[in-house]
Figure 1: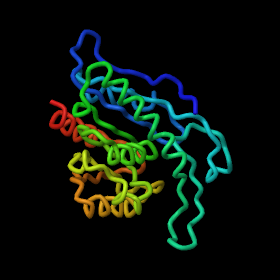
Figure 2 (figure 1 turned 45 degrees about the vertical axis):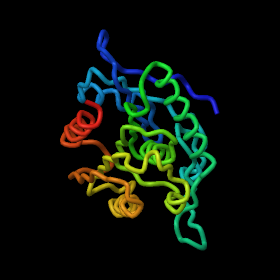
Figure 3 (figure 1 turned 135 degrees about the vertical axis):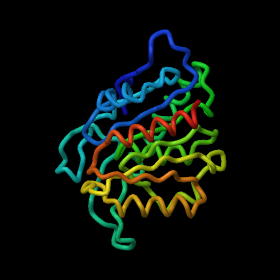
Figure 4 (figure 1 turned 120 degrees about the vertical axis):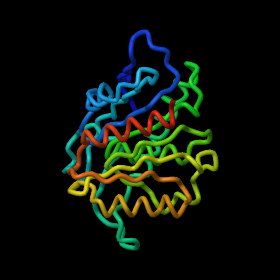
Length: 223
């Protein structure tokens, strides 16, 4: 799978001591969160905003768009849950591994690297971080859900058993329901993952109050 070079945002001349890899949602690209990075105003952090490759998305009628994995939509006859593109999720996981390795090569410890994402990008952030074999600084999971929930217990890596998770969702989200997100939170808590939970009066989006809370989380975990 070919990926365009990610967008990198950092303040010129600033001493970079941490990195955040921030993944956009379905149909967007790395530039989508550029204005939010500016609002966060954290000059010691380098923000890496990768671009998902374009692929046909089954649930959208096969329309080709930037996506971190395919969405099928049809339920599994045994579980009733939607069938998930495990192979596609793992391709994106491995790509994020390469971005982490690049930051480590630039002198940033994994303990100073955070994964973040919105919607489908947040799903990849959660999936990747909880399985990563070295401790990470945390996860920003925005308007998203935990993919392949039934496999978490067997696949979670002890290195990130205590990885702090900022989980935020809009109460009026009609793309990924609040109930779906709360179900993911329950799975994480049952697995003893620490979740910092936030709800906002918004739909499938990001609001100013959320950005302020994200900034506080980043300062706490990546001072």
